[in-house]
Image 1 (cartoon, helix red, strand yellow):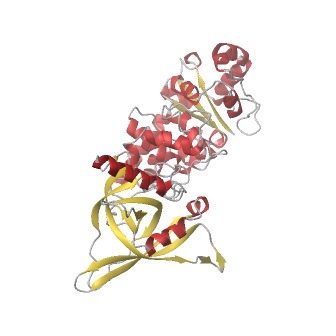
Image 2 (cartoon, rainbow, N blue to C red):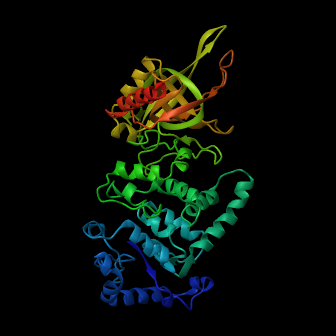
Image 3 (tube, one colour):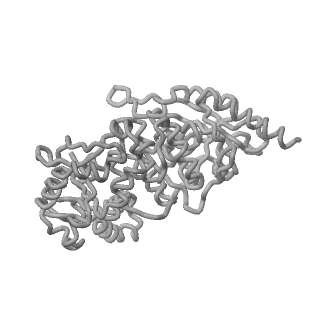
Length: 450
């Protein structure tokens, strides 16, 4: 188990950041015992207005007798407690103490050993623990020999990552730096949103609703008990209309109910490319406008996957034929090998048949950004052009992980052209997606003609 709690200034006023690593773990346990002993007083003074009872049924360090204070979600749902109120505990705490069973057994206070152990622990993979570290002004990890301050940890990882960054050779320290820097508190609202999207890619929840609900405190949004997962993600996206245009290529989850070009959740992302900071799209009432490298898909074939004679189901592999018009030689093409995530297939089982229909109708396209010269793969959007529209408008079906094909055609296939597209907000895999887009388009045309 792991736990964390905000402690008042009086319990730490004699301990500076430099002294934290030498402060004994027994002192933390004494504070927790004191907290438990006075829980009735705390309940009456601090939590009575929220209708929350203190939960002391979780043990730390596997088998210890010390308990920590934590409201359960059953209590949250049955009371007037809100996700925003929970967030205020972490925002206003002078220190947030992180108690992780394995870190507490770690015979070290090294700023590299600690994050390595945390990467192997459930603490980094649970959706609710993100807000507790992201909102903390000062977070302290309890190790076997003392304390590791979170900001010291970040500083050391940044320093050790410099040689790898200068050599343009991503390594262990750059990965650790990215993993933990996105957990650090910041006032930059754009950075907060991108940190949430990046950090929650590997986080899970026992209740799928928490994949949206647990993000509300960090993003300073107020949750409603009537929200579904789709409702929650829609609120998140509409509150961050500019920043979400950087993240349409997040690969893994299916597309959202609204907007249909964004990921349904941040959890489960296998590849999370973030478009260039200065390459924002534009959120409009009808969709998201931006420029993309464009390739028309003229063929689609599903590739059986076998490993040692047994079928595999991690993803669905596809062979896509890209067509180009050449005035002298006619239509030229090249093959791309790509995959759709298993999560997308499971949650939108009709996506393959819809893609095949789009290819058959000649309205299927791949949209992507120019890859780095050293890249062997990229992520693209598989879209269907909206035939009624006079401009290039499209519905997004899914993301594709693609292997970049070798340029061995004779004559060479010309590079894809960059084209302005409007990615429609409606999700075409739902029954109302396409009809809603058509209705909106006709209403818009009627308005323009009157």
